[in-house]
Image (cartoon, rainbow, N blue to C red; front, side, top):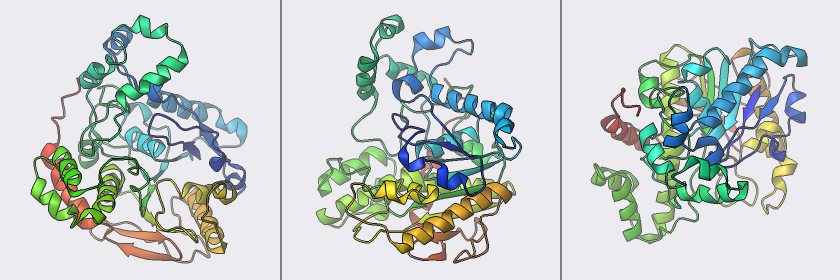
Length: 402
């Protein structure tokens, strides 16, 4: 099992204490965690860099690092007791988004056989190479001059390409881009068209993906909320108001968080689940809903990671919300299911509190991982149907890679 860390493609680490692998690996897997370049070092596209490349492209260096790591595991894991023909990749957030992108990249074919995607930022519109190159020149027009900067100054310039308020339905330039080589096309048309490495997947998201990640956004009243809708849904403002409308200022923060969660995580989760099921693959979907004792909101983006790795004690540090026996039992069930999926392609194991139903697009069945395990269906279906219609109208031409 190979773990790809999160961090919005600008941070994160393969040595985060929450993902210490001692407990999970004791369940019978060979566990590998990797690092990959992030921020400007990992995803800066620039015409000067493209001119130096044999492929005529730049950016996507972090994805190339991941592909290199996967090849290393394929070639060397037997020396550690692993089987390169039984490789599962799993990750959270940007790491999970990376897996989604690798599923559509010709460069990763055959490097893994199963995938677990936790809150993937999947199927977001990708910036073109040309757009990312133009944006990259804001960091500095001269590549050689940039190379003479010290590392701290380069890191400081990350802010040049990371807006305080993220566009919800528009591409970001400091993340993977559609370069025509690593990524020939956006994920959405690739998934719908069946141009994806078909394999069993386990995929899901958390109950409250958005409130923590939008907490610093200065959108507090109805006027600000309406401006956000216009900025992201200009071609369907009234429909967006109907789906996400806030009746008064007290509802604004909640609606902003929901819009963020749906556009950044929930939509892509359902799309990839449907696409892989359409390919005849086994798909297992979950929604993580467990709030710890004393927790008034959430579970937030990434809060399931400690349960997956059995590291609740690490996640407890500095938090007023404690874990209890319910969390311990849930963590045990999740670890057993994750390992079972990696081993057999099916997360169901003896003693699981509820049977995990196979995913089918017509029913959108999933397993709720909460105070108790139970089967659910149609998670946020009205909102995601709206986004499906929106992205279908906006889909770029397949040949537009530069």
